Length: 577
Image 1: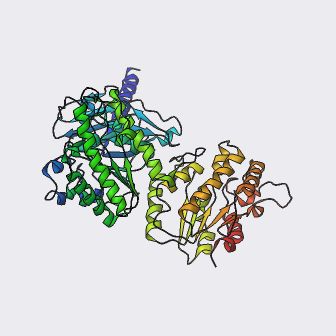
Image 2 (image 1 turned 90 degrees about the horizontal axis):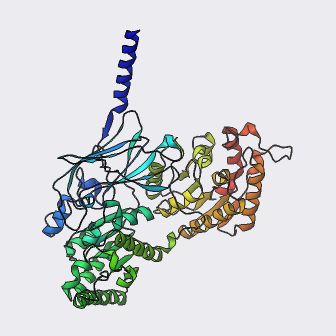
Image 3 (image 1 turned 45 degrees about the vertical axis):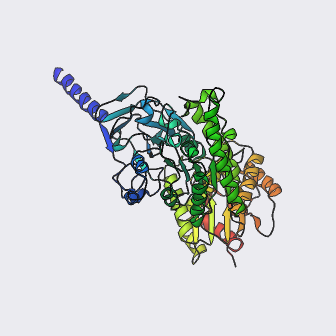
């Protein structure tokens, strides 16, 4: 009996030891570093810097030194481990009096669940400081699809040079790094306020709030005390294929006098040599103690006056897509500052909100549908949603597709059936079906680059069955499809849009029919937009309105015979003559 107890104890200890083991992953081990939030990622290589070595000879010395610090950089990964450890080294401790240690030298973690909901995850003082810093996040549970885990964003220290980093998860759990998005980023050039002074932690930097809440990549080119608009900075930025350029150097540059005009006009022209992306010029934020320090306030406003003169001069030259953000629009109050120079948590939130409001004006084509707010997802475990999104962008930019097929798993799965190859033989087609997608997910994909870099002649859209399965109203779904169709037409006006009525599925035949009736009534049809109906081939011939189950794999997804019948019905209506 004692031997049995001893054996059980040994087994328990061994199992407990295995469970307690941590598996470590290094974001630098891939061919391209798994670092997000910087341009020149491949060229920079296996360091946590923000600029490649070739800039060292031309950049101002202070800018080059600060570019070694990891401001705005982020590591994205996915895991279902309930415990996450981050083990990293920094070259030196900041020691800034006006900055919390958890900001200038700490890391910050956010998680996104399978439905696209993002929340902060505290470390609850789970850190150990030594030559190697270790931060531990414990007892993490995904609220939905727990087996899928969470998608994480780990923000790196903004005011320290990160020299090494590893992420540890419980042995036996899933883990994968996610690459930087290939979509065009928002590029922000500015002072210490851009670099990350002085919120309490990295996730509350206004640039990181902007990245998280718009879901656009953001490249942080903030350089503390060194944003003086030198030519090499604009030359470097002109290499970036940006969504928007934000030029916010005035907190450092306001004392340059008329040189502001010369440097800013030259810089904008340099950007325009290679890019037509919107450019936003930004004034210094209001000084919080201007009532009792009026002279300091006048100095900032004098610099802004020269900046506005540069803006108006560029407009008179015919520079297009140029915008301006005043200190009044930034709107920071007296309680928004640490010491009168750098914003605190409240000030960074106000900064982010002012920029989000301005970006809605600048990127009006990305105005979200209030009923179907754009969001990512990774509910389907049969493929990686993020990697597929990246691959679709790459394919559409490089293959000049004639036809785009946008949808969910029904579209995605069609490409593995013989009828797909037979129907589209000789055509350049991108299958843009994503399993488990809903209307809001397609919105996100379009806002984040999937229709860029191509000019197809035909686009097909079939989406909404997963919204119906979620319990949404038929008229809401139909309205969402109509609004999504208008967005596609706006982005691809030359293409003929074929909206395909939702296919019937087991147990929801009547709801699908009502939804399709609503769609028939709401969708404006013309020479460029048509509504296609192939549903009759999937229904029984007894007029019951029920599906013919012999044509489905599971009551939702057609089988080979079902796809073959659909292809026969749709081929002549979809394929350009």
